[in-house]
Image 1 (tube, rainbow, N blue to C red):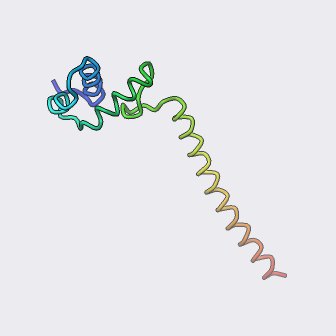
Image 2: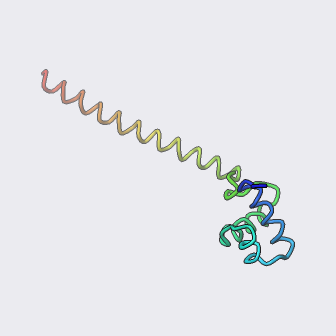
Image 3: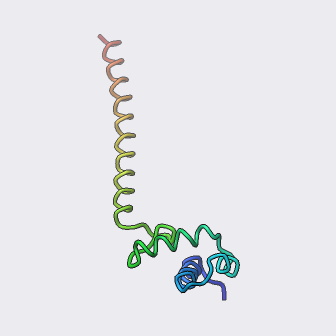
Length: 96
């Protein structure tokens, strides 16, 4: 049976937390060893919450990401309004 990446990561964490050598788990499951170490660190720090590497962000990080996207959208809107204002001022000075 082919497993999806979350199933593989979950299995790898269970095996590594169970004192199996990460290098062996990496080879058995064909997963990058660095991913296993990162997942293990996330599991130890946020054992009840999903890790970013599992495709889910920590709730704090989700909120920060959402706010960063909102800031980018507002900055883009600000640039557009500045350009539009410059065009209107230019048109007013030409018509005067």
